Image (cartoon, rainbow, N blue to C red):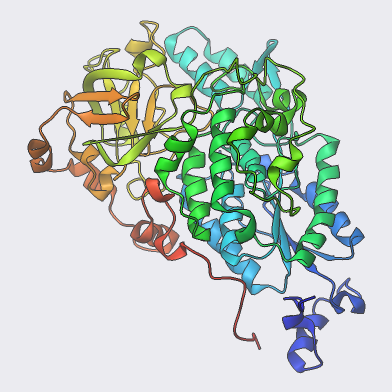
Length: 571
Ligand code: FES
């Protein structure tokens, strides 16, 4: 067996190995340094990340498993991002969290790592950091919360907020009832229970091969999560002994499997930027068009909010991820491995569906073609994405006049103005919300409809934005328009009244203005102003070096891997 990485710190009788050992002797016996694997538990538990607050308990079960298998478990708190708490948007800090995780994994005397995440950005950041260090790693997804109900009706967190707040604005729900639903929304520990970003990324972590097979989607309060956490600790010791690294697990085949699963599950559009960013750390040749080419003809099989009716608890009860994957097994790469060393498809033989309303058979899908469509045209030369499964079918081919908002503040100020020149056929455009423009590419693309349109009973309009959309949101929303307005994209030169053409079947997104005229227009000054580089700190580094959405919105200097070697001693 190869010498352990941690032995570079601990072995020998020189002064520095003495120092490294002595300070760790608080609780660790002398034989902790006899060649046992030292395994970090990278833990995103935080009171300010409510979706991950239970991970300390999960961590204890992981540690028990590591100890039982003869390893040394080491708690490593890492940067945590609470999606609902962090301003201006958690996405501004995803790359910072990934960088901090990467550096702490590399800098410390560890042989492998168990990654504990849940809330939206935490699993992507953990996987990005682990990919760049490429130490043996395994994820325990924190799991979704149980279903809350209000007046007997299930509430999908996130999706329910959007729906109820629109009802208030439309005058069909009182403000008091809206407030009353607040305490019912978050019923238990765990992350959002719709097929939003957290659910999607937890499930895709397993499809990528990075979890103990069968764990993803286990509800956070379910005792089987702790059982799986214990088993993951045992597995982590074996994983280190086998030396299986993320680069050998997360191959192109694994990412293409994730794209198939993303479509069949009806997962979040945010998975596009996260998967591209993780692949970018590994040097895997994954491009945005792969999502359309591989995923767009995959049927939607899971009837979960926001595209359908049920919630994550129902998916688990109905057979879970493996039951879904078994339905599309022929579309999966049979060679793609999991952290056990066996292929993902090996685990699908025993899968069963217990509720055919939640997990549909291939011949009776929720929608025959799901996944992500990638659009191009003079409004999005480098692409834009739409999730047709969450859109209104009648709006997937549409022509209408633009109503342009230069910022979120502009939108809020004018949206409900009775004099706003807008009809149900208008196309709402919100710009200045890309990675550089906001900065941080917030989830604002699912902009609310103008009050006077809501009052007509209309519940969906075509909306276009260079930002992202919450995975719990729905509607005919074109996102991730690239290049963004603040990077000189044509979105910054569209004017209110310009005819916009959306043609999803033919993958087109354009403005019906001659190209020469569009190019000759000055960009709206507000979009230039939006990109006024901040003076200092992470935000400064972020806007100076962040890439565009179509490549994962990672920092240019964080692409690729640096490996696990540290060349110099600390003393
Ligand atoms: Fe944490 Fe939704 S707010 S997963």
